[in-house]
Image (cartoon, rainbow, N blue to C red):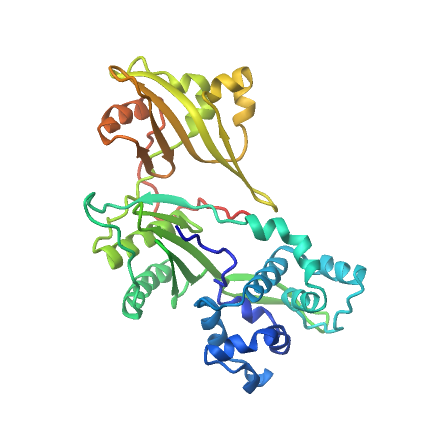
Length: 399
């Protein structure tokens, strides 16, 4: 199965962070590639760089896209995003790289100058970050009929416009402005959707060149990401608020599958009982038909500057952890948990994997009723009462 390459250019605003002259010099080694995509960079002056056209080429790479160009864009962006200006200037000075003495320069401009002089400097500093950085997604199940074949939806300009208009109405009511944009990137059996939209207006103090203090009033921009997997009929959502997440599920469900309720929006499952109850969460004597339950695997994501994804497996994790189970399960955010169930009258155990917010994978569909009874009894099934459509609970990006 083809995998999404996280280094593919996916943020159209990155180019705007780089001064046109530096951007042109940066892209010069790959002018032939742009020429093959009917964009002659040499014909454009630095006063009138075709930023939208360049972004269009980068966001829709073909089979001949130069890998070194993709890597260069990614390293420069990641460095500009995660490193402070002071640190970049110090690194450049230590390596003997002379940075232009330009006071109207962005962090991205400095990153580009370092890359042009010594690419490995940026690569060494960010090897781990660029290799493992991922976004934290919440997953929701679709309602495709079981016998219907998997099909990757296509998003035409007309469909994108319809979705943008619907989202703009919501964003405007929530004081986030209009003119959102959707960018679709099919990759094998999956399609990645980027939603670019405004955030609430921000007012803050600014330092002016004459030394006086001023006020900056502007609308920041945000990019949210969704991934639809046509094979499993699941969608992963990374968004800033619960309201945005529900907006996307309704909008994409209606536009692509004919119903705003296509994706189950309930946040049905939680893995909190593993930490709260420990081995007691495996109790099963009150559920008819279950002869035993073992906790055999979990995934956990650790936040921080260098993200870490941890997976632990054992024949029985609670027995392996013994009296240290609470300490061993403390910290990080659970991504999934797998249990092995022994059933009365059956010699073979069967696995069930729970993936918040509402994904449950069964080996046998006939087990669903009895396992759901166990999930509810132990507290893993926890659909909350109605909440505000725009509750401020955040899904954090690993950084």
